Image (cartoon, rainbow, N blue to C red; front, top):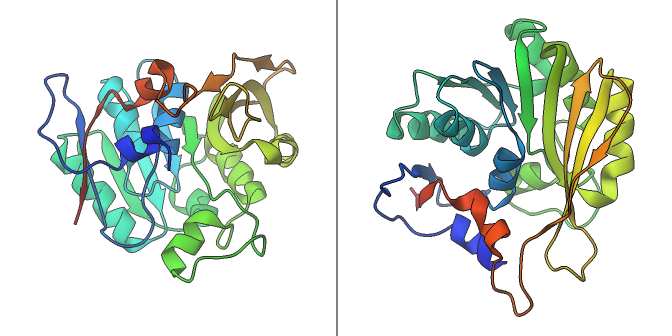
Length: 254
């Protein structure tokens, strides 16, 4: 585990003067890492946006965006009941429940219980691995968080497209090696990739992750942002790699 990631899972600390978030999660099963912080830092919502977090987990991405942008409203959809419960707990703990609502449900069915073409932005930190690829965790919850057991990239793109307004954006973090699939899935649902940022552990390493944004009905044209390098030689977290964690005050387990 990287030092940046271990910071994201730190034991509880007092709330900071800057208003850092308190984020609780179950003691067992899937544990959030640095990825949702990177995605929240990548997204730049406009004033008053309605944001949809697909596969919200314990609410990290949505709560970060709401805490940094006091005019946005967040709706999160999470299939796993315990994670959905913790997302609601975290919203209340950070006094964000009036702007962050979390629904327990299957994101593939979200167009049936959420208004169509309603959201300005969709965010997602989906499972990275295809079903059947690599060794699956014996823990059902961890397996579902790491492998596409309940939804695929195509499902994510189709749901995002159905619920986004024309001109709305989807922002996602995923494995860099799956970029061709990501772009194909987005294109098949009418989502045009507009921004890409690769993420690498060290300057000399191959990129491991990618941050991607796409626009519903957007014109062709991809902006490739400077690569994000997380660590200095020797493992120390670079300032740029630690910046997404600035609003994180506690990583409590319950």
